[in-house]
Structures are given as structure tokens and as C-alpha cells.
Amino acid sequence: MLQVSFIREHKDQVIKAMAKRNLDVTTLVNDVIAYDEERRSLQTQLDNTLSESNKLSKEIGLLFKNGEQQKANLLKEKTGQLKEASKELNEKLNAKNEALTELLYQIPNAPHTSVPEGNTDEDNEEIFREGDVPVLAEGALPHWELAKKYDIIDFDLGSKITGAGFPVYKGKGARLQRALISYFLDKNTAAGYQEYQVPHLVNEASGFGTGQLPDKEGQMYHVTGDDLYLIPTAEVPVTNIFRDEMLSSEALPICCTGYTPCFRREAGSYGAHVRGLNRLHQFDKVEIVRIEHPDNSYKALDGMVEHIQGILKELKLPYRILRLCGGDLGFAAALTFDFEVFSTAQDRWLEISSVSNFESFQSNRLKLRIKDKDGKKQLAHTLNGSSLALPRVLAGILENYQTPEGIRVPEVLIPYTGFDIID
Image (cartoon, rainbow, N blue to C red; front, side, top):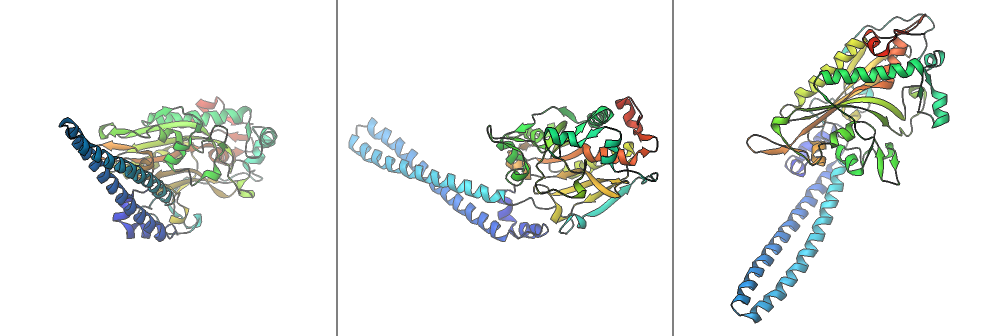
């Protein structure tokens, strides 16, 4: 969340920035400033009351020592009144702090100055495109029909076991899926990212820490009996490794990668655009996360983009990069680049990665700080990206690599699959 001090000192800037998201936060910002004034006033009153109480306690000790019991008893009565007053002030202060936090939770991150204006994904800015779209043989099929033809992904069986959006990968389909996971992890670790295996369920504090709660609560699967949430992405548990930490600036950057299944309710998703692997409730994803010094975070973001480009070049998939407009920007992100792979059989672009800089928005929630060599303390910057999400990468491979003889396997994956064609 945004820092209160930043909102107070840059009120007009925050309101203007949120307008790029098509949001009018004037009332919220004014309420935050008013609540903060009240909070600070209560804190001052509490500090003064406690200070007076401590001063009187010392005087009482001296009076008893000097045998002035009557004066000491009178002061003891006053300290009792001060204790009651401090208790009441403390309760009011806690209530005001909670109310202020609830207001702050409603304000998204301020977009970076480079974020273009716009309302929907149609207003996103294409900044790069690479790769030749293959010319497929007549009668080329979308991946859901290829999956059935070669018996590698069973959507009906997944519906039988669980429900729609939970496919079952079989035979060479399962091996190709596993090959992609191993390949992505190998590429990430070779680039300096340390691999983590993390829990697939998180507590409420972790959800609030990275911004999924309360913003995306309806999109997460909630295990009510234990008050835990199935993770929507490895970003949540991996980033929360560093919650409540004070890191030395010399330890930065911290680069992490991890593979997890991801779970999203995707409420309201329907239609042809979500068919097959295009939109799932459970899917696999390899994630990269970075903890950076604020001075280096945008250089690090560029490096993450280049890293993912390298993977897509090796897979030889046609792709493009979009800079998300204000209206399509995620709640916690300051700047996001989306990668999309072109599906020749579906004749459409499929999003396969989002790479974002959250600046200090998550770290403020996480209480994740860094200490510079000169002793200065400040909030870290956090970044994350899909490297990569498997369903649509797999869909792109199945559709773009199909031939009359079968589905060819990208050359870089053959050492992982042990076969070069699905037939």
C-alpha cells in the first residue's frame, strides 16, 4: 500500500496518478489525510499522558522516601486517573489506526509515469514484436482438438474428477508439461535465481502482504476450516519469505524462482476465449521474484523482460510485449509488461507472462525494509514475473508446431522430453 507520508506530501500527484487508472480517489485521499491527522493528535495526547504519568511516578517514589505519605497518596490518585486516560486514548488510537489501514487498502499503487492512459486491454501499448508466425497446413486444429486427437490432455476427465478448468495431462502431454517446468527452472537458476519450493496454501497475512487481499479475495480459493488460501501464484509465498525482514543493501538483489500449481476461481469467465487451456482454475507456473534497492528496480525490470525474451526465442514462438495501460494495470503494480504468444490455429494472441515492478507498495504491507551502508533505512522494491505460465505456452507449442505427421517438440525441449514428436 502507499505510505501515508507519501499521500500527505504528494496529495495532488496521487490523485492525478489514479486518474490514469480511471479512478477518482479524491475522497479517499482526503479521508486518509484527515484520519492521519486524528491519529497523530491521539498519539501526541497519549505520549503526553504517559510522560506525565511517568514523571509523577518518580515524584511519588521520592515523596515516600522522604516520609511525605499524604502528598504521595494524592499523586497516586492522579496517576490512576492518568492511567485510565491513557487506556482510553490507546483504544481510540488503535481503532483509528485500523480505520486508516482499511482506507489505505482501498487505494491501488500509483502508476509509473510511463504507463499509458486507457480503459481496457485494447488500449495497451505494443512495444516489441518478434518471431515469424508459422504457416500451418490446411485443416490445422486448435489445441483442445489436438489434445483429444493425440490423447495428451483430457478435459472431460478433469471435469469428472473435479470440475471444468482442471485438466488431466496424459502420456506425452504430461511429459511435455514436466519438460517445460524443468526447462524454465533451469533457465532461471542459470540466470542467478535461487530455486525455492514453497507451500501451496498461505495464511491471511501473506495474502494481504502481496496485495491479493482484500482486492482479489473473490478470485481465491478459501479453505475456511483453517482460514488458509490456495495460492494464485508463487509470487505470494515466495515474496512473503521476506515479510518483516530488515535486509542489508549489500545482500541485494535477492533473486528467487519457484514452480507451483496455481489456483484461481476466475469467477465469471466464460465463452470461446476461455476454451481448453486458455483459462483454467488450476494451472502450473514458474515464477521469478526480485527484492531490489529502489535505485535499481527499473533496471532490474528491464533485465527480467530480457530474460523472458531469451526463453521465448529459444522456444521459437512468435511473441509480442505490451506495456499495460492504466485501466488494465493490476492493483499492486506500478508498471507491468505483458508477454503474449501468437496462436496461429486460434488466430489470436495469448498472454503467457506478466512482469511487474511494485516499487514499495508490497514492501510497505510486508514491512520489508533495507538498511544502507550509511545506516539509512527504507522500504525495498519488489518485482515479479511469470517465467513462464505453462497453459498458454503449451497451447502455443501444440498449435504452432503441429504438422501433418504430428506435433513437433521445440528443439530446446527435446533433452527434457526424450522425444521429438507427438504422434
